[in-house]
Image 1 (cartoon, rainbow, N blue to C red):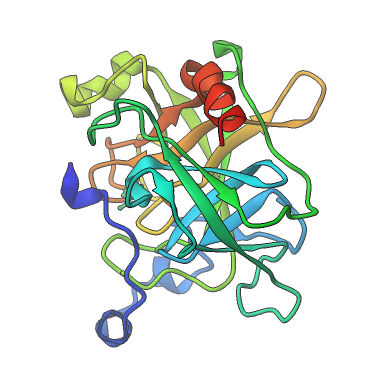
Image 2: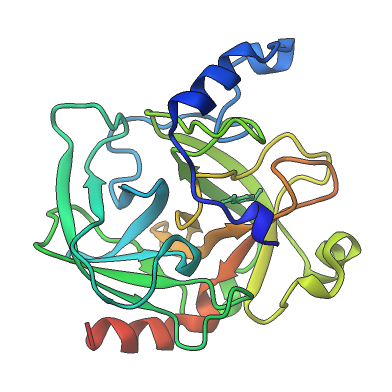
Length: 255
Ligand code: 4AZ
Protein backbone atom coordinates (compact mmCIF):
# COMPACT_ATOMS: atom_id res chain seq x y z
CA UNK A 1 0.00 0.00 0.00
CA UNK A 2 2.83 2.39 0.70
CA UNK A 3 4.00 2.03 -2.88
CA UNK A 4 0.86 3.65 -4.23
CA UNK A 5 0.64 6.35 -1.59
CA UNK A 6 3.35 8.57 -2.88
CA UNK A 7 3.30 12.30 -3.18
CA UNK A 8 4.10 13.50 -6.70
CA UNK A 9 7.76 14.24 -7.31
CA UNK A 10 7.99 17.05 -9.83
CA UNK A 11 11.64 16.31 -10.56
CA UNK A 12 13.72 17.01 -13.63
CA UNK A 13 14.66 13.32 -13.74
CA UNK A 14 11.03 12.25 -13.75
CA UNK A 15 10.30 14.77 -16.53
CA UNK A 16 13.18 13.51 -18.64
CA UNK A 17 12.18 9.88 -18.16
CA UNK A 18 8.54 10.62 -18.97
CA UNK A 19 9.47 12.41 -22.19
CA UNK A 20 11.29 9.30 -23.40
CA UNK A 21 8.26 7.05 -23.08
CA UNK A 22 6.64 5.96 -26.35
CA UNK A 23 3.25 7.61 -26.71
CA UNK A 24 0.39 5.33 -27.69
CA UNK A 25 -2.56 6.50 -29.74
CA UNK A 26 -4.72 6.48 -26.62
CA UNK A 27 -2.24 8.66 -24.73
CA UNK A 28 -1.86 11.02 -27.68
CA UNK A 29 -5.59 11.70 -27.38
CA UNK A 30 -6.76 14.18 -24.75
CA UNK A 31 -6.65 11.80 -21.83
CA UNK A 32 -5.23 13.11 -18.57
CA UNK A 33 -5.92 13.00 -14.64
CA UNK A 34 -5.86 9.52 -16.10
CA UNK A 35 -8.49 9.47 -18.83
CA UNK A 36 -9.88 12.94 -18.10
CA UNK A 37 -10.22 16.32 -19.77
CA UNK A 38 -9.10 19.86 -18.85
CA UNK A 39 -11.11 21.63 -16.15
CA UNK A 40 -12.22 25.12 -17.10
CA UNK A 41 -10.96 28.11 -15.13
CA UNK A 42 -13.39 28.60 -12.18
CA UNK A 43 -15.19 25.30 -12.83
CA UNK A 44 -14.25 23.94 -9.37
CA UNK A 45 -13.45 27.10 -7.38
CA UNK A 46 -13.03 25.14 -4.12
CA UNK A 47 -10.06 23.15 -5.52
CA UNK A 48 -6.61 23.85 -4.14
CA UNK A 49 -3.13 22.58 -4.96
CA UNK A 50 -0.63 21.84 -2.18
CA UNK A 51 3.09 22.45 -2.63
CA UNK A 52 4.09 18.89 -1.75
CA UNK A 53 2.18 17.78 -4.85
CA UNK A 54 -1.26 16.96 -3.49
CA UNK A 55 -4.77 18.29 -3.94
CA UNK A 56 -7.31 19.55 -1.45
CA UNK A 57 -10.62 21.39 -1.13
CA UNK A 58 -11.64 24.48 0.79
CA UNK A 59 -13.70 23.21 3.74
CA UNK A 60 -13.79 26.70 5.24
CA UNK A 61 -12.28 29.85 3.75
CA UNK A 62 -9.24 29.31 5.98
CA UNK A 63 -9.28 25.48 6.24
CA UNK A 64 -8.35 22.92 3.57
CA UNK A 65 -9.49 19.29 3.70
CA UNK A 66 -6.89 16.91 2.26
CA UNK A 67 -5.42 13.43 2.82
CA UNK A 68 -3.47 12.52 5.96
CA UNK A 69 -0.90 10.69 3.83
CA UNK A 70 0.03 14.02 2.18
CA UNK A 71 0.89 15.59 5.55
CA UNK A 72 4.05 15.31 7.66
CA UNK A 73 1.99 15.18 10.87
CA UNK A 74 -0.03 17.42 13.20
CA UNK A 75 1.20 20.71 14.60
CA UNK A 76 2.37 24.16 13.62
CA UNK A 77 3.41 24.21 9.97
CA UNK A 78 4.18 27.25 7.79
CA UNK A 79 5.90 25.28 5.04
CA UNK A 80 2.95 24.32 2.81
CA UNK A 81 2.01 26.68 -0.02
CA UNK A 82 -1.67 26.41 -0.96
CA UNK A 83 -2.53 27.58 -4.49
CA UNK A 84 -6.17 28.48 -5.17
CA UNK A 85 -8.38 30.24 -7.67
CA UNK A 86 -6.85 28.82 -10.83
CA UNK A 87 -6.85 25.82 -13.08
CA UNK A 88 -3.39 26.73 -14.43
CA UNK A 89 -0.89 26.69 -11.56
CA UNK A 90 1.39 29.03 -13.54
CA UNK A 91 -1.31 31.67 -13.99
CA UNK A 92 -0.41 35.12 -12.69
CA UNK A 93 -3.84 35.30 -11.02
CA UNK A 94 -3.09 32.31 -8.76
CA UNK A 95 -3.82 32.94 -5.07
CA UNK A 96 -1.01 31.59 -2.90
CA UNK A 97 -1.40 31.29 0.86
CA UNK A 98 0.84 29.60 3.41
CA UNK A 99 -0.24 27.01 5.95
CA UNK A 100 -0.27 27.79 9.65
CA UNK A 101 -1.22 24.50 11.27
CA UNK A 102 -1.98 20.89 10.31
CA UNK A 103 -4.33 18.46 12.03
CA UNK A 104 -4.07 14.84 10.94
CA UNK A 105 -7.01 12.50 11.64
CA UNK A 106 -6.89 11.16 15.20
CA UNK A 107 -5.69 7.54 15.10
CA UNK A 108 -4.32 7.75 11.54
CA UNK A 109 -1.76 4.95 11.10
CA UNK A 110 -1.49 4.67 7.31
CA UNK A 111 -4.59 2.51 6.85
CA UNK A 112 -8.00 4.19 6.60
CA UNK A 113 -8.79 7.53 8.30
CA UNK A 114 -6.93 9.23 5.47
CA UNK A 115 -7.96 12.82 6.11
CA UNK A 116 -6.31 15.94 7.48
CA UNK A 117 -7.03 19.65 7.81
CA UNK A 118 -4.74 22.57 7.04
CA UNK A 119 -5.36 25.89 8.77
CA UNK A 120 -4.31 28.74 6.47
CA UNK A 121 -2.36 31.85 7.42
CA UNK A 122 -5.22 33.90 5.94
CA UNK A 123 -8.64 33.13 4.42
CA UNK A 124 -9.07 32.54 0.68
CA UNK A 125 -12.06 34.36 -0.79
CA UNK A 126 -13.37 31.43 -2.85
CA UNK A 127 -16.42 29.15 -2.44
CA UNK A 128 -16.06 26.23 -0.03
CA UNK A 129 -17.07 22.62 -0.76
CA UNK A 130 -19.70 21.21 1.58
CA UNK A 131 -18.97 17.69 2.87
CA UNK A 132 -21.45 14.81 3.00
CA UNK A 133 -22.73 14.17 6.52
CA UNK A 134 -24.75 11.05 5.66
CA UNK A 135 -24.10 8.07 3.38
CA UNK A 136 -26.96 8.93 1.03
CA UNK A 137 -24.60 10.37 -1.59
CA UNK A 138 -22.37 7.28 -1.58
CA UNK A 139 -23.80 6.27 -4.96
CA UNK A 140 -24.04 7.38 -8.56
CA UNK A 141 -21.43 9.27 -10.54
CA UNK A 142 -18.63 11.34 -9.07
CA UNK A 143 -16.31 14.02 -10.37
CA UNK A 144 -12.62 13.91 -9.50
CA UNK A 145 -10.17 16.70 -10.32
CA UNK A 146 -6.52 17.47 -9.79
CA UNK A 147 -3.04 18.12 -11.09
CA UNK A 148 -1.82 14.53 -10.75
CA UNK A 149 -0.24 12.15 -13.20
CA UNK A 150 -1.97 11.49 -16.50
CA UNK A 151 -0.72 7.93 -16.53
CA UNK A 152 0.59 5.51 -13.91
CA UNK A 153 4.27 6.03 -13.23
CA UNK A 154 4.64 9.40 -14.99
CA UNK A 155 5.70 11.16 -11.78
CA UNK A 156 5.33 14.64 -13.24
CA UNK A 157 1.79 15.81 -12.59
CA UNK A 158 0.25 18.54 -14.75
CA UNK A 159 0.23 22.33 -14.44
CA UNK A 160 -3.37 22.54 -15.63
CA UNK A 161 -6.20 20.95 -13.66
CA UNK A 162 -7.82 17.86 -15.17
CA UNK A 163 -11.17 16.31 -14.32
CA UNK A 164 -12.89 12.97 -14.87
CA UNK A 165 -16.12 11.16 -14.04
CA UNK A 166 -16.06 7.85 -12.15
CA UNK A 167 -18.96 5.70 -10.91
CA UNK A 168 -19.46 4.41 -7.36
CA UNK A 169 -18.25 0.85 -6.84
CA UNK A 170 -19.92 -1.18 -4.09
CA UNK A 171 -17.63 -2.50 -1.31
CA UNK A 172 -18.40 -6.11 -2.20
CA UNK A 173 -17.34 -5.50 -5.81
CA UNK A 174 -14.27 -3.49 -4.78
CA UNK A 175 -13.24 -6.35 -2.46
CA UNK A 176 -13.00 -8.71 -5.43
CA UNK A 177 -9.72 -6.94 -6.14
CA UNK A 178 -8.65 -5.48 -2.78
CA UNK A 179 -10.01 -8.10 -0.36
CA UNK A 180 -9.68 -7.01 3.26
CA UNK A 181 -7.22 -4.27 2.32
CA UNK A 182 -10.40 -2.24 1.78
CA UNK A 183 -11.61 -0.77 5.09
CA UNK A 184 -15.29 -0.66 4.20
CA UNK A 185 -16.52 1.80 6.82
CA UNK A 186 -13.70 4.27 6.22
CA UNK A 187 -13.17 3.96 2.47
CA UNK A 188 -15.32 4.19 -0.64
CA UNK A 189 -14.37 2.89 -4.09
CA UNK A 190 -15.01 4.48 -7.47
CA UNK A 191 -13.89 3.70 -10.97
CA UNK A 192 -14.70 1.95 -14.21
CA UNK A 193 -14.09 -1.81 -14.11
CA UNK A 194 -12.59 -1.57 -17.60
CA UNK A 195 -9.95 0.86 -16.24
CA UNK A 196 -8.52 3.82 -18.19
CA UNK A 197 -10.06 6.59 -16.01
CA UNK A 198 -8.83 7.24 -12.46
CA UNK A 199 -7.11 9.49 -9.96
CA UNK A 200 -3.35 9.00 -9.81
CA UNK A 201 -0.21 10.08 -7.99
CA UNK A 202 -0.42 13.81 -7.26
CA UNK A 203 -4.23 13.80 -7.13
CA UNK A 204 -4.12 12.55 -3.54
CA UNK A 205 -5.96 14.70 -1.03
CA UNK A 206 -8.22 16.17 -3.69
CA UNK A 207 -11.98 15.84 -3.44
CA UNK A 208 -14.32 13.33 -5.07
CA UNK A 209 -17.67 15.08 -5.35
CA UNK A 210 -21.14 15.02 -6.92
CA UNK A 211 -24.30 17.10 -6.94
CA UNK A 212 -26.64 16.92 -3.95
CA UNK A 213 -30.45 16.92 -4.15
CA UNK A 214 -30.41 20.70 -4.55
CA UNK A 215 -27.86 20.60 -7.37
CA UNK A 216 -24.98 21.83 -5.21
CA UNK A 217 -21.56 20.19 -5.20
CA UNK A 218 -20.99 17.97 -2.17
CA UNK A 219 -17.77 16.16 -1.22
CA UNK A 220 -18.13 12.41 -0.78
CA UNK A 221 -14.50 11.27 -0.92
CA UNK A 222 -10.83 12.22 -0.67
CA UNK A 223 -8.36 10.72 -3.17
CA UNK A 224 -6.46 8.18 -1.06
CA UNK A 225 -4.87 5.19 -2.79
CA UNK A 226 -5.23 2.27 -5.16
CA UNK A 227 -3.23 -0.39 -6.94
CA UNK A 228 -1.66 1.72 -9.66
CA UNK A 229 -3.84 4.02 -11.73
CA UNK A 230 -6.67 3.22 -14.11
CA UNK A 231 -5.96 -0.51 -14.17
CA UNK A 232 -8.86 -2.73 -15.21
CA UNK A 233 -10.63 -4.23 -12.18
CA UNK A 234 -8.78 -2.03 -9.64
CA UNK A 235 -10.98 0.96 -8.71
CA UNK A 236 -9.60 4.03 -6.95
CA UNK A 237 -9.99 4.12 -3.16
CA UNK A 238 -11.22 7.28 -1.46
CA UNK A 239 -11.65 8.29 2.17
CA UNK A 240 -15.38 7.96 3.00
CA UNK A 241 -16.05 11.55 4.03
CA UNK A 242 -19.49 11.01 5.57
CA UNK A 243 -17.99 8.55 8.09
CA UNK A 244 -15.69 11.30 9.36
CA UNK A 245 -17.96 14.35 8.95
CA UNK A 246 -18.38 14.85 12.70
CA UNK A 247 -14.66 14.28 13.39
CA UNK A 248 -13.76 16.76 10.64
CA UNK A 249 -16.12 19.40 12.03
CA UNK A 250 -14.74 18.87 15.51
CA UNK A 251 -11.13 19.09 14.31
CA UNK A 252 -11.89 22.25 12.32
CA UNK A 253 -13.43 23.91 15.36
CA UNK A 254 -10.26 23.17 17.33
CA UNK A 255 -7.83 24.54 14.72
C1 4AZ B 1 -1.08 8.14 -5.20
O1 4AZ B 1 -0.01 7.60 -5.41
C2 4AZ B 1 -2.31 7.52 -5.76
N1 4AZ B 1 -5.63 5.22 -8.61
C3 4AZ B 1 -3.51 8.17 -5.65
C4 4AZ B 1 -4.65 7.60 -6.18
C5 4AZ B 1 -4.57 6.38 -6.79
C6 4AZ B 1 -3.36 5.71 -6.90
C7 4AZ B 1 -2.23 6.29 -6.37
C8 4AZ B 1 -5.81 5.77 -7.34
O2 4AZ B 1 -1.17 9.18 -4.57
